Length: 73
Image (cartoon, rainbow, N blue to C red; front, side):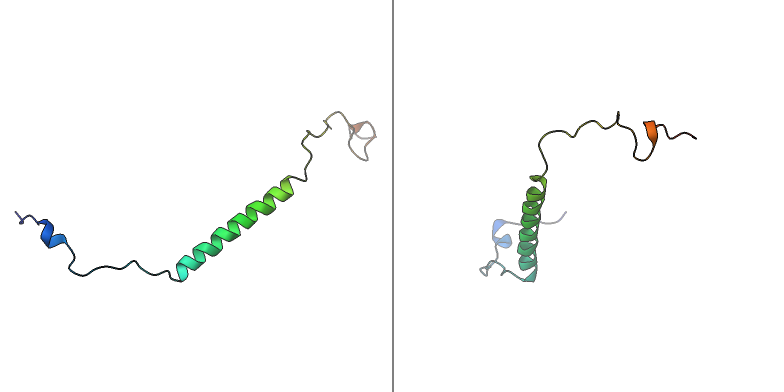
């Protein structure tokens, strides 16, 4: 059975500084800005649509066909 480690062995003798930001952090920030910009433009596009439902066109005749049946005539 392996020997158990004590707290003294696990402690790092050298102080560890926080890692610096690298290129991936910059890419993450750019992608966040791009997503927020895309959401803004999606909202701007969506807000142009009317809030009411379109009229029901099932009862209207088809274009170019008299009576909407389209049979041989």
